[in-house]
Length: 132
Ligand code: HEC
Picture 1 (cartoon, rainbow, N blue to C red):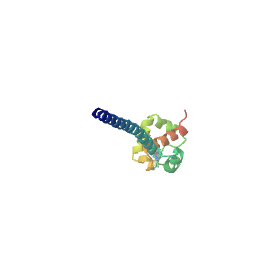
Picture 2: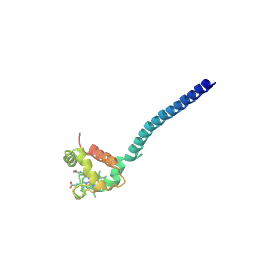
Picture 3: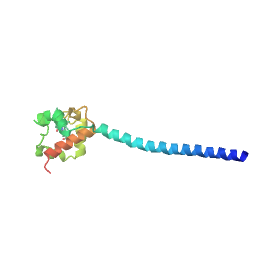
């Protein structure tokens, strides 16, 4: 009888270990899933849903960049924008995010725009302005 109980205890322990193990596996699967879910919401936060580079341009940048106010490179003017594009996109991105020459305002005055969104607006301007 003692032997049988002994086996029972061992069996119970085995079952417990099994439960703990599957719990552990489940936990790690959930962690892996959690990380990717977090990364997804991070991407969403950087470029919010329904973001439109064209609309943002019209709302925040057009006031200066349609008219060329204060020497702003004019939208659609390939001469103006090729000269800027020669500096490299990364420089244009940084000068948009941080502002430039004390006249181009930081973030182009789109204070709700994330850095990634501002980059998309710069891409949009270049695509519409620089001949490829
Ligand atoms: C208040 C006017 C104004 C607004 C608003 C504005 N800009 Fe500008 N921007 C300028 C002026 C002026 C320059 C030229 C500065 C110079 O070369 O001295 C400029 C230059 C730039 C450049 C070229 C920077 C470089 O390195 O040559 C980029 C890119 C740019 N603007 C993007 C944007 C974007 C994108 C927006 C909107 C999100 C925006 N701007 C809104 C006035 C403005």
